[in-house]
Image (cartoon, rainbow, N blue to C red; front, side):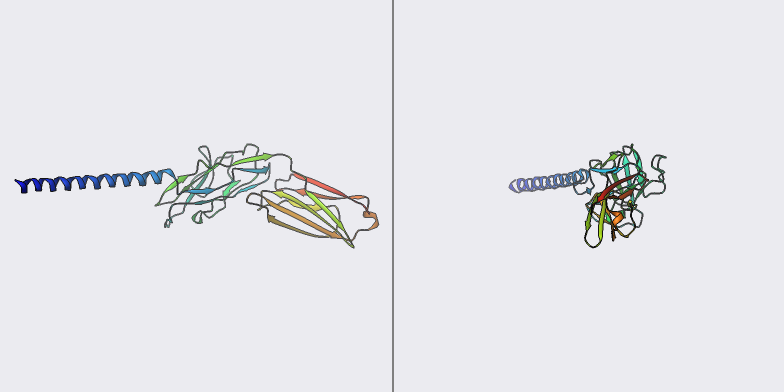
Length: 246
């Protein structure tokens, strides 16, 4: 009788252990599903707002990371969207609407986590908000719908910043800020001289283009304005001037 009770107790203990392992397995699966669904391991770095001149172009910097490295021979598909409308993609089978066709493209290499997007000939209706979606074949897809980008579009460009220094020669600089590094603005001077123009990155969103002119001023140059004219991508212009005083 004692042996029988001991046997039943051992069987009951084994059954309890079996149910415990089963519950632990279920909890682990639920925990994994919650982690995958929450998107905690998916991250993206995009600006929330970018100032853009209407008619010019804009480059939206974008970088993302995903939970683990995926190995696939197929092309990764990226989509920039506004609502349910695709505004840019690297997937040729997706046709963009007439509103964005031929003026929108993904510049970044998606496999390396670069989802940078360029929009040309910016219109006043291109305010957004926009968000990015990535599809990695044989792995996963993820939509960064909580990380939206809006474009703050302005119609009139700011005049450039000018400075002048006169020693034996006159050196003047003209600098302007923009969001279109692939098609920087062009700067023109009202005087002839040795001209050098450079563009550089100002921050993650904006670039600066600066033109420097050097010449030997003549008597006739004084008490007259030295003008710098800026022509942006899209042909909008602005200018500044400095009066040359002897």
